[in-house]
Image (cartoon, rainbow, N blue to C red):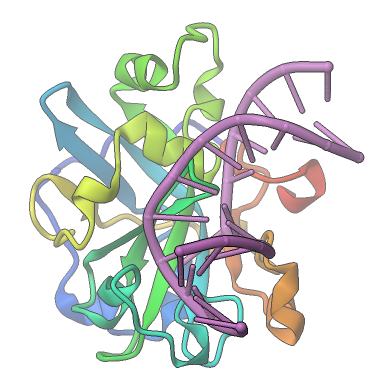
Length: 213
DNA sequence: CGACCGATCCTC
DNA sequence: AGGATCGGTCGT
């Protein structure tokens, strides 16, 4: 597929109603949309090519499962279209879009981007490796946060604002593939739900080769 | 208050 | 295949 380009107008946003659709619908429709982070170091961002839907409280793969409502996950209960961000393995931040019916603790994990802006800054943040290929810069939920400089400081931000924001975009439905979500084997039957969405055969999608076709 | 562990990534 | 690395979560 041909390389993505920047959206024509970085100031466009989704209406709140977009985020209040069922969480798996939002996850699917976010493919082809754009995520940007504006910092003193400049604008970094790209086109979303991989997402996962997390549907608490019944979904045992979600942080919000089993009726859990703690300080860490409180953003999942908050307004739709805001950021839910968490630290995993003591090292990597992961970014989610709060989405789904109002009041339910649900979110969409953004797993990979095709980088479009601020690639030099991304390489700096990723600690050297100036020779890293473009398609690897935002390949995986931890890497894309590191590349864009997304941290806990961005927790709860409104994605309709101008610091950490989403710009509408679409993906040819014929290119959309689904699979079970990655690394939630502990979730029993919930681990089998086809709630991972990705652009088929896109170089920036994460996971083993068979999970990218 | 201590023990356990993860919606990951990199290196070996 | 295994280690890094630490805050959240839960049991005692």
